[in-house]
Structures are given as C-alpha cells and as structure tokens.
Length: 263
Length: 362
Ligand SMILES: Nc1ncnc2c1ncn2[C@@H]1O[C@H](COP(=O)(O)OP(=O)(O)OP(=O)(O)O)[C@@H](O)[C@H]1O
Ligand SMILES: [Mg+2]
Image 1 (cartoon, rainbow over the protein chains, first blue to last red):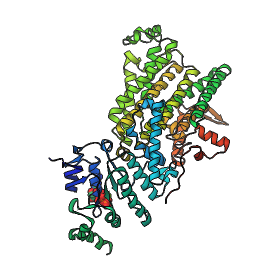
Image 2 (image 1 turned 180 degrees about the vertical axis):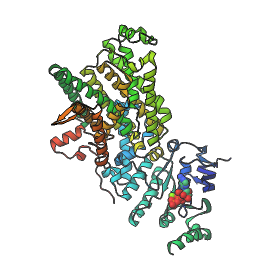
Image 3 (image 1 turned 45 degrees about the vertical axis):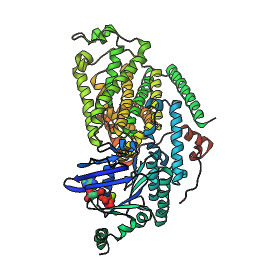
Image 4 (image 1 turned 60 degrees about the vertical axis):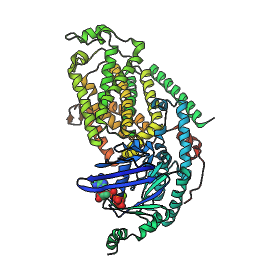
C-alpha cells in the first residue's frame, strides 16, 4: 500500500461497520500540509466516524491511516494526539468539573517531562515546567478571548464559550493537524463569523492543517479551499466550494434532506 | 514574599502547631481519648488515600481493606518480637525470612514503609487486570480481589496464622507516628492532586474519552493513582496493626472499606479536606455511638444490646446523604491558605491569583 507521499494525513480505502451498518466504506482521502478542507454530508453520513478513525477511537475493519507517511492504524487515541493530531468533539466533551485553565492544561500534560514523584514533591524542575505550561495555556486562552474566565468552572460557561475552550484545549496539544467537528454548532451568526476569522487566523499562525466538519454552509464555503462530500458512508464528490455548489449529486443528497425539512 | 512561599511557611507553622497540640494531648489526656485520636489519624491516612482513587481519579474501587490488610500483616510480621513469633506459630512454623528477624522500635518507620510497599504492590497486581474495566465492573473486580486477600489471610497459616490472627504486636504506633503519616499522606496526595498528574486523573474522572483524546494515557494514570493509594492504605493498615496490637482477617474485613466509603462520600468525593475532617468526625462519632450497642432501658421497655447497631446508623446516614446531599460536605472543594486568608482580609479569592486581565471579545 502506498503511504501517499507528500500528504500529511491519508486515509487509504478505510471501511468501518457497526454490526452490519457500513458507517464508512472504501473511504480514500488525503490532506496536504497547510490545507483547510471541509468534510460535509447529511446527518448520519459518517463524518464524525471519519474523525474517530483518524484519532484511533474506532479501528477500521479494513484500510489504513497514515500520518506524515507513518501507518497509525490501530494506535490508541492518546498516542495519535501526541503524534500531532488533535480534535474537538461534536457534542463537546469538556472536563466540566475543572476550570477553563485546567481544561487547557490537561492537553499539556503529555508534554510534561517531570516524574510523578517530582510533581508530588513539588521539585523546582517540575514547578518550572508547570509555570511554562500555564503561560502557554494563558496565551491560548487569550487567543480565544477567554483569559478572564480562566478560573471559572468550564461546565458553567455558555455554549459558545465552551466551544472556544474546546478549541483552545485542542491547540494546547501542539497539533499539526486539527480536526474540528461542527465548531459552529450552537453559535449565533455573529459568533460564527468570528469563528471563521479565528480558524483562518490560527491556521496561519500555528501552521496548521485543518479538517472541518460543519453544517453551516456559509462557514464551509467561506473558508475551505477544498470540500469533500460524503453520504451513507461513501464519498460522492470533492472539489472547490464552487464545484461542490454546482454538483448535481451533492444537490440531490442535500435536497433529499431538505425536501424532508420543508415537507 | 510570593504567595507560594507564604503558603509553605504557613503550612510548616501549622504542622508544628499540630505536633505541639499532639504533645499537649499526649501529656494531659487519658489513654482512652488518645486511642480515639490515634484511630482518627489512621483513618485520615486511609480515607485520604482512598479518595485519591475514588474521588480524584474517579475509579470506583472497593478494595482498600485488602491493601490495608497487606500492609497490616506485613508490619505485624516485621515488628513482632521473635519469642512472640515462636509463641504464635507454635504448630506450624512461620515462613522464612520472617522467623529469623524482627525490626526493633527505631525501625518502625521502615516497617511501615515496607508495609506501604506491600499495599502498593498489591494495588499494582489488582490494578493491572481490573483497571481496564469501568464503573460497576471495576467495583466488583476490586471487591473480589480484596475478598481474595481476606480469604488468603484466613488460610495461609504459615504467614498469617489464619483466623486466629497475630497477637502481641508491639504498640509502636504512638500519636506522633500516626500524626506524621496523616500529615505526609495529606501533603503528598494534595500536592499530587494539584499537580499536572492530578489534573490528568481528574480529567479521566470527568470524561475518559476526552482525556484520551487530549493525549492522556488513561490506563497508566489510573494505575498510578491506584498504586499511590495502595501505598498509603498499606501504611494505614500497618499503623492500625500496631495500634490494636493484634491483626486478624476480621480487622480488615469489608466493613473497613464500607467505613472509608462513608467517610469519603460524607466529606465529598474528591475533597481531601473533606476526607480529613470526616475521617476524624467518623471516628469520634462511632465512639460516641457505642451506647446504641449496649442494652438500653427506656422506662419499662428493655432493648438488649445489639452488636452492629452503629453500622446501621452509619448506613442510614449514607442513604440519607445519597438522597439529599450527594455532594457531601465539601463537594470537590478544598480549604487552602488563600481561601483562609481571604476570609481574614475579607479579600475576594479570585483576586488573590494574579493573571492578566483582558476583556472578553464577545
Ligand atoms: N459507536 C457507534 N455504534 C453504532 N453506530 C454508530 C456508532 N457511531 C456512529 N454510528 C452510526 O454510523 C453512522 C454515521 O454516524 P456519524 O456520527 O459518523 O454521522 P455524522 O455524519 O457525523 O452525522 P451528524 O451530522 O449527525 O453528526 C450513523 O448511522 C450512526 O448511527
Ligand atoms: Mg457527526
């Protein structure tokens, strides 16, 4: 099997099934370094499942996942994250009992070099590392505009702010590839606008490669350079936003849905 | 002076104060009261260590009595005088190497540390297979393992002397040792809980999937919490052995775990302050409630003494707590120096921590 040289992330003929239901089948996909790509499709199309395969949550029945040319199929999620792929969750999974700052700091833990003993005894080497992590986390919170909420319990924040905490937390893992699962869900149009700017901004600033799942077409069409459409677990189209908008297959996949919506 | 340095000084001063109080108590209070105090301190060690696994890491273990038993028997075997060993194991000899040596009083801390190591090793052996399980399954597996340890204690006569137990253990566990270990446990575990490792453990408690997705190896961190918890549980078991001067399987039965569970739930799962305070309160209360187990005459009605009535009271307490006050006394909160001082100076707690203030963009 080829590792699809040159690409930072590649899915090679991946299939996932849940007790007979093919959530994703024969899925081929590549991401080039620095790209911002959208992954769209109707509800239940298999988008989140694609993320779960990349991050090691699910193991594919067949096919492989390559990251920087290395086969990462079957790796545990924490190992995938440490390798450089971070994500957010569609239905937000913040550590609700922890503060906003602690949420972000959790993602720095894998970078810690001090042993548990050094931490429990508060040795200077550990204290120094902890301080550096805190500085870094505060910078990221500043970037998402949540510095003054750093010591607030994460679970008590409104929806839009929780989404931003989740993005800051993912960025704290120092990823090369960032997977965003419906980051604009639950945001008002104004927040969505700011999120679009923010996503483009962090990509340039941190040199990220971003894969984005989103139902908000304005957002997807507005910022993605390339869009992949899936339906019933299968790729049905790929191209620039303009090409996708005019693609009859995509229109019928979505029309099927909208016909129901407007019925 | 930085806040951190100030807090360290306050902690040192407070520890000195505690030892001074212990000295006063030891000099002026009677033997019975001092026994209650020592028991309370041992319960602090046991409960705080139990809270690390159940409250901080959020893994519902029912095994601490097993780890306490390992520590207790280990310490008993180490410090029991040689002539007493011959006396206890008069039918079947005690196994090598315990039959050829005995640690003297100055080596009691070493014995406790080895007892802790036994608890930690036990936790490692129990943790590796069972920490892959979650929730109820973990609880059942750890319960099973601690039962196995008690069954072994009942039957491994060359080591444990079976159901008869081991008598005549020297009473080295004075109030100073009990206090030292209680303080050590609270310091180490609260430091750990506030460290990056503790944060990782709490993230596992809140959401395992998200913790793993943030790069936390969850099995490793559960195991770390389990082993550290097992160490201090082992120490507390050893202290208890030396306080009571006998060990037997019934001392470390499941009701020990049940007591600890009441303590940590009552104090607030995840709150070390809560566990510390309720461990002490529980010990005093269970002494105070002794009367419910003795025969009572209310006018013409005679109620015979019923052993185990206290447990009934505590069980009821646990049920009421679960129904009406699930958070416990402290929830997940802690009393810190910053908090205490903010009350003295009437200063807002958030203001104590300095961080750059920026206005939210939204
Ligand atoms: N763990 C699972 N067990 C069983 N079925 C699953 C599981 N995860 C996903 N599925 C199924 O796989 C299909 C694809 O789900 P997925 O969550 O990937 O869709 P999606 O494209 O993200 O949809 P949405 O837009 O609603 O988020 C659905 O039919 C879903 O019910
Ligand atoms: Mg989805």
